[in-house]
Amino acid sequence: MNRNIDIKSILKNSLKPILEEYNKCIIDDSNNVYIDNTYHIIPNNNNKFFLFITNKKKYEQYKSGNILYFFQNDNTLTDFYFETSLEFENEILFEGYLYNDNTSYLISDLLYNNSVVINEYTNRFKNIKKLITSNIFQNCTINFNLHCNFINTSQNINIFINNFIYKNEIVSMEHIKGLTKTRILLKNNKDNVAVNKRLEKTKYTEVYNVYNTENGNKEGVLYVKNIQESKILKNMFIKDSCVIVKCIFNKQFNKWKIV
Image 1 (cartoon, rainbow, N blue to C red):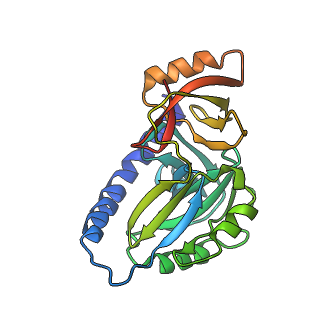
Image 2: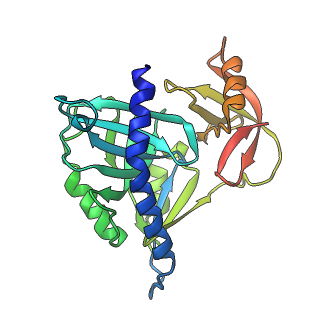
C-alpha cells in the first residue's frame, strides 16, 4: 500500500470528529448576539490552509515527533504533510495562510487544542503566541510565524499592506467576529468574464499559483474543481512550468479557475 495515501487517510479520519465538533460550535456561535461592532481584520493572499498537528506515535508505534498535515476545506487535491521532530503533545488545529510559493505559513487562528477553542479571538491569538516559541518550528521545511491582524477601527492596515514582505500577494481581507469569518476580495474580480491569467507550477502536487498578466501580481492559488481539471492542468505543464490560460473567478471559493 502507498504509505503517503495511507497516512493521509488516517489523518483525515482523525480530523473528522474534530471538524464536526468545530462546525457545531460555529453554528452555535452564529446565534450569539455581540453587543459591540468590533471585529478583527486579516489582510491575506486568499491561500488559506489549515494545519493539523498530531503525534507520530498515534499512527506508528515507537516513532517520536509530530506529523504536520496541511489541507484546504474546498480542495482535497492540494493537501500535503511532512514529519518533524517537533514535540507537541496535544493535537492542534491551526488556521493560516501559505505565502511565497507555499514556503511560509503565517498562523492566523487556533481552532483546536485537545478541544475546540471557543474563546474570543484576542485570547485565541494570545494562545497561539504561547504555543509557538521562537524556536519550536526550527529546522522545518516551511517557515512559520504569526499573521498580523487589526481591529476594524485601526488606521494601520494600509501601512501594513504597503510594507508587508509579501504585499504583492495580498488580494483579500478576512473579518473575524467570534468564530464567524468572512473574506472580502480587494480587487474587482467578481465579474463572470474569462480573462488571461499566468499559471505557474509549485513544488506541491496540484497547487498552481495565479498571476495577473498585466502587473505580475500574484492573485492566490488556482481552484482545481475535480480530477478532470487536474488532468487537463497536468497536460498543460508537461513541457512548461508557466502557461497563459483563460480563467474565470469562482465566487463560491473566491479563487480563479480554468475555463
